[in-house]
Image (cartoon, rainbow, N blue to C red; front, side, top):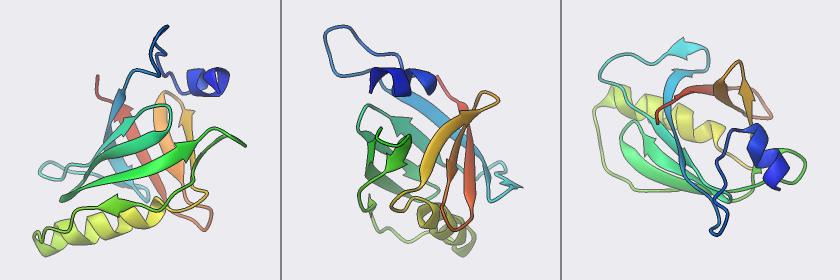
Length: 124
C-alpha cells in the first residue's frame, strides 16, 4: 500500500497512518473550473474528502488494483445557485465505485469507468 500511495505523492508519516494531501480541482470533464467555482480534494490512506463546489463530501478509497473509490459518496445537502449545483452533480457523479485515482503530469486525475474526469493541482 505504501508503494502505491507513494506514487500519488502521499507523504507517509513514520509512526502514524498518513499525512493529508490537499488538491484544488482545475477541470471537470475537460472544462476548466473558473473563479468563483471551488472544489477541493483531500486524500489520506483510506479516504477522500473535500468541497464539491457547494457541499462537503467524503468517500472511502483503497489501493488494491491501483487506487480506487470503494464506497458510496456521502455529502451534505445544502442548496446553492443552480450553476454550482450542476457542477457539483457532475463532480459527484464521477466519484463512484471503481473510479480510478492517479497522477498524470503532476496533476491528480480521477477517471470514472464510464467516462468523465476530474483534474486537480496540488494545493499544499
